[in-house]
Image 1 (tube, rainbow, N blue to C red):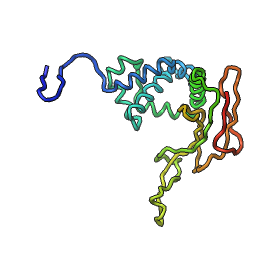
Image 2 (spheres, one colour):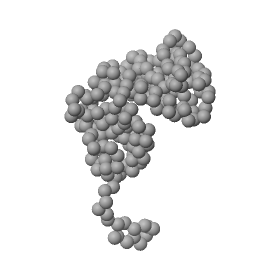
Image 3 (cartoon, helix red, strand yellow):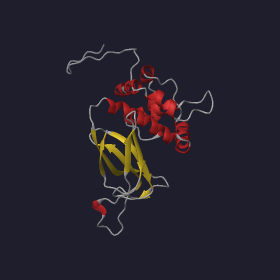
Length: 229
């Protein structure tokens, strides 16, 4: 034990397994409690072989990495090398960063997005069942993700640069988000290939017998709709 004479605490060595990502352990337990892993495995395409990684073995580490401040797929190693976190959470197998990239590209063309929509609806149905609210405001807004990909378009020009002869914008992938105000839940999204300062579409919806909200894309409409369950 190292005695401190200035600071009001003591430093002691331990052989116990610890983690620098204790906050992610709480997030992981919350996801497990929501049955997120089972929902992902049942809704997304299955691996091609018995030895392949299940969808949850990609999604779960990715969620933890992004919420832990990760910015690229290489940051997955922060989760892979954290033995303490892997002992607490169901993280027995974690793919490599290259495998993550290949899987994400495959999911983009092999039904993965539709599967994620099913997972989102399951979680949404569960959350709205217990919130005690009967009326909601559905907002549609455009936002963007800065990217250097070839498909990203030059879109937003900062106000500070508009007076220049050749103002520089930002290479961005634009998409529309439909979300419930004050509820922090995204209902629907749509990627766009160009700038969209105002929504150019609207959402229609209805409640099924189970209370699940069904959304579809239609013609132009104001950016705020009233949703009543």
